[in-house]
Image (tube, rainbow, N blue to C red; front, side, top):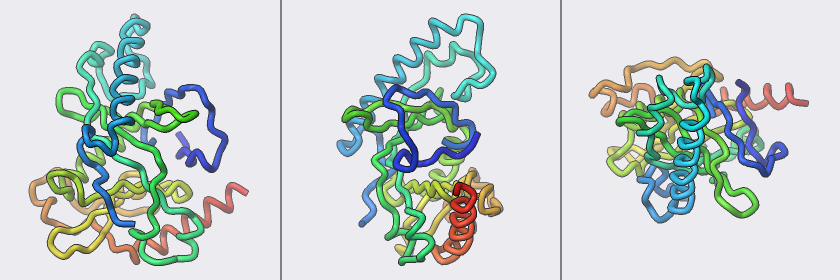
Length: 245
């Protein structure tokens, strides 16, 4: 499925959208913090309420079993009974003009989008993400899916995040079709970036280490400096913008 453009770059419907997203869908405040924090209480409460409705609707209507392209990674529709909302995070982005101009470090270019995403878990494992946005002034869950991203994000958090996840931010660069985890090191306070699945595919980065291993947490092998990302990001942004004209 194509990478979805930021709502500011395309017309956005006002009705609830349940999208299947198989592969995707300032100072740094805590981003991937616990979903109960005050900063995300509104989006988190809405995500929980909407998931309960989503579960109930599917349990009542999917009598014939699980459809082939169901947006969450479950084996049976009855698994939804145990699905829960986990941690949440705000999505940051970097605008194409800033990347093409190379105005400073990526960290300083990143801006909040107002979009929140929440992990959906089943017995301790991530099965997808819920995307929450403000529609007509009210929070709504507008998408379920991104099971691949959810698992990739869990692995990156295990490798690089501190206990309260206050040293990381999720950055999606729409015009480069790339997601990153921004990581501030506890040892040298430097900011580096872990390319997530979409960035590894779009920018042809290779995954260098097994981030589920205990050694990965103390290794920076896979983290990239801001200056290492600028050139490939400029090329991807320029190519994709030219293709859309």
